[in-house]
Figure (tube, rainbow, N blue to C red):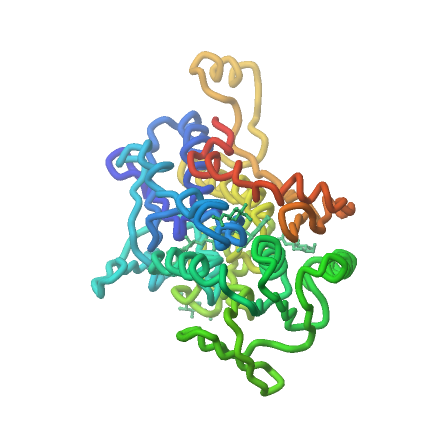
Amino acid sequence: MATAATPYEIVIIGANFAGLGVAHYLIRKTIPELQKLDESKSFHITVVTPNTDMFFKIAAPRVLLNATAIPESKVLRPLSEGLSKYKPEQLTLTQARATGHDAAKRTVTITPVGSEASKDLHYDSLFIATGTTSASPLWTLHADQSLTSTAFKSLHAALPTAKTVYIAGGGAVGLETAGEIATTYPNAKVTLLSGGTSLLPRISPAVGARAESYVKSNSVAELVHNLRVVSSDTSKSPNTVTLSDGSTREVDLCIDATGGKANSQFLQADWLDETGRVLTRDAYFRVKGNGSDDVEGVYVVGDIVAGSNNTAIEVDAMVPTAASAFAVDFARKVIGVSAEPAKSGLLASLFGMFAGKKAGPPSLVEYKPMKDTILVPIGPGGGVGQLMGWKVPSFFVGKLKGQKFLMELVEPALSGDKWPKA
Ligand SMILES: Cc1cc2nc3c(=O)[nH]c(=O)nc-3n(C[C@H](O)[C@H](O)[C@H](O)COP(=O)(O)OP(=O)(O)OC[C@H]3O[C@@H](n4cnc5c(N)ncnc54)[C@H](O)[C@@H]3O)c2cc1C
Ligand SMILES: *[C@@H]1O[C@H](CO)[C@@H](O)[C@H](O)[C@H]1NC(C)=O
Ligand SMILES: *[C@@H]1O[C@H](CO)[C@@H](O)[C@H](O)[C@H]1NC(C)=O
Ligand SMILES: *[C@@H]1O[C@H](CO)[C@@H](O)[C@H](O)[C@H]1NC(C)=O
């Protein structure tokens, strides 16, 4: 436990939307508020990620087009740009992968990239924010982040002359990518394999049906259902693609836009659901554990949360909620004040004013994500989507997301300015 000499140690594993968000939120808001409650407490955060950059994945379908549509340097941004303003006694950024975890010892084993030498990192509180990794490095960073850059560059080189492009995956990423390629490279014949019976199966049948008619009426791509890409040899051109019906095709390019796998290999299996994502024990993103091990002060945020729908919109709502659970748990366990409304009285509030302290212990923030909201541009001018369940007209999808791919969100996420201050 923390004393004045040893700060309370918070470890955050993963540093993209969720992990970076938690780091900024704790330093800007949660920690200053806890220090108003007890100024003798000090905190140190260690952020562990194999990557040096934040990746604004959302814009990947446009970044892959060519070197200028949205330059790679605008979506791959050094984490240090956002985090180096914090003092070393507040935060340390450690370039390593979590490779193991011991709940009883309260340690995470970390292994630096390109090294065998692992070490154990002690935590008082732990935030798991490791998200997912897609097979193709176009959509998520891999441990070696240069793979993402290489993948962009190889598409930049191949797309201008590609005549046949297969895109595997009928979710938002595959659909957006089909729209982008069809618009910029009208000479390419784009085939979109949904892999199932409809587009956007995880969103809603209504939006999926609108997407299908958009693709057909605007001749974006040839849409094929019920056929999956089983494997593709992209080592030589043309690519040989093997399909689930046993047939093979030669295509100039095959792009894998199927979903990612949860990054939870470093955790014990009895913490995870059947998709490998981390189970929670309440609506505040406290980790469930296996029922008998030590999960006090352990939280999970982002796409790695069991039941998450893998959206940044959810991440934005999870960060304040999980941080509030940490604050409540810390106040109870370490400072000894409960989350119940404090017994107020004239004396207490006078004392609070006198001491310049904010009255009252921290309280839980309810998780309230913006529901049923998604925008799927299909090319720069239009697309499909819904806002809180309401249909968004095509031109409005273009205005809200298709024109700039939400690039205005990069800077505030990196700097932390999107989050409130205490
Ligand atoms: C093309 C595309 C378009 C999208 N468009 C939208 C959109 O319009 N709206 C929306 O709301 N959402 C959108 N999303 C979803 C959104 O990007 C995700 O919800 C968000 O990135 C999740 O953030 P995360 O931090 O939880 O996970 P991730 O972004 O997956 O980040 C996880 C981080 O953890 C690190 N990590 C992994 N394993 C380890 C380990 N063992 N040890 C340490 N670190 C590790 C990774 O390197 C990475 O930095 C889109 C996603 C994609 C791919
Ligand atoms: C790159 O793609 C964008 C988006 O379609 C387009 O406007 C631009 O002309 C392209 N640039 C080059 C050099 O091909
Ligand atoms: C839970 O995990 C711990 C290891 O952290 C193990 O010792 C314990 O036996 C497990 N309990 C159950 C019920 O499986
Ligand atoms: C995912 O979406 C479903 C259906 O809208 C919703 O019930 C669930 O709460 C969402 N998950 C999260 C973590 O928000």
